[in-house]
Length: 433
View 1 (cartoon, rainbow, N blue to C red):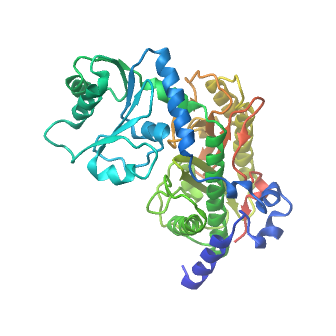
View 2: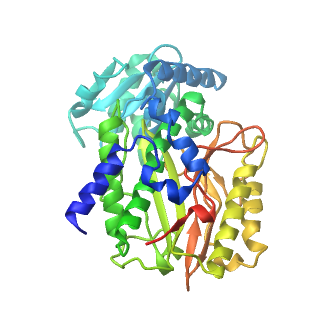
View 3: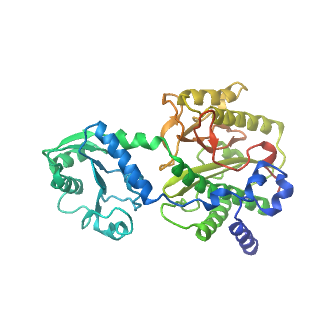
């Protein structure tokens, strides 16, 4: 990798406020990609949800608690603490919990080393312990304090109820009625409101940029390794985020480089770890990136042909794209998750490539990169507007390579709304090196 050329690339990529480079006009022509790049509204969206949003969410949780006659709900899963309070923290072995009473504001129970972080946010009431493991099991410590706040004889909803934890919960609040309520917050997370979708749209602004940065690097440098592509794109994305983010809480760029970028026969590995093989003409190339912003994950994956594709490559690509488009079309209100999966993957089966199927059509996406529901056989969830999914059917020939696009899609009334802006057609996915 030549240092000067790499530095020029990174500076150019980091300065780009849209997603397409000016130099790509001759390559992309007048595609949808260039039409939207000049003034992308996601560039001006917030980087995190507001305290008012979380107050409304707590009120919604309390409404669901009332239906179950719960006096209190104790959340022990870090992702659900974040969902209800917006309290971002480094989740470790140290137990941390949010108490949501049937009325009023939540209370946090935290290790002392997190106390400075708590003071920066809207949830003002907390209790802390020194460190883990401590003289008393920390889950027991949490529930002793929950009980002391007037819930010792109450009906308390809980999650994360493994036998070892349940033992400590009952030791901490022996007089309380403990009710398993894992699904209460989990089900609420299925459907995103417009604020959440806008946050994901903002994340996609950066995620699509990472795809373009990877593409630009390949086009500029030719015979590169997967590690080099990952490093260059991650550096460009980090520079762009550092320059443009207003709030930097809840952002993730997976170390050491972030993403998956297999090419050649390795593109038939859906989850290929990086290698040092060198890219060559005729290869398929998959650029796959996930971005987290304000706690919410989005993903964009795009498949490219390095040089003009062969007839066989076109057939594989067309089968993948037909499955992808069918999946997006059917992510609509009232559809059943497993039916969407079948309709999508049937596009691959009907052209004779069933043996190249390796996975489902998609998965739920939000506070976790992979979360329920699943666009997969066996999931009978009826889709509702505001649910968000990846749509990522793939075709993988182990003797040649594979293709997979992934979009982040919002379920809408008549068909899915794609948050990604990067193009998908074959003619737009050819990289000449």
